[in-house]
Length: 86
Image (cartoon, rainbow, N blue to C red; front, side):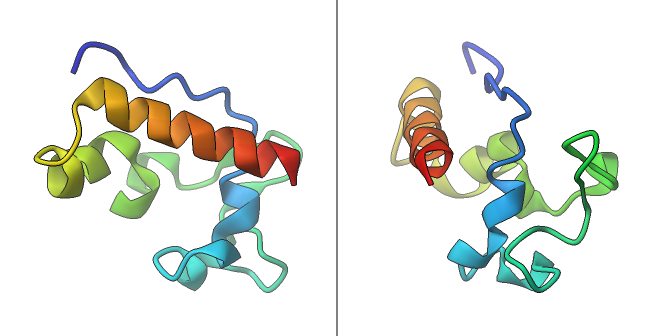
């Protein structure tokens, strides 16, 4: 990997877990992750968060044969933009 994923810690992915079948189990009932802390916009279980919440792990487990790391980062950043527009 040529770079670390440039997360801005906006919390949008954590506030929209209801949009994916792979993250809906984290939904506290309003679309937001049960571990999302509203005041800090951080994950209360960050070090033990599920693999689906880890961009680098998802790349290595599922996408490294399909995309380069840079391509995968760009795809994820596009999703960040889409969530930001919601």
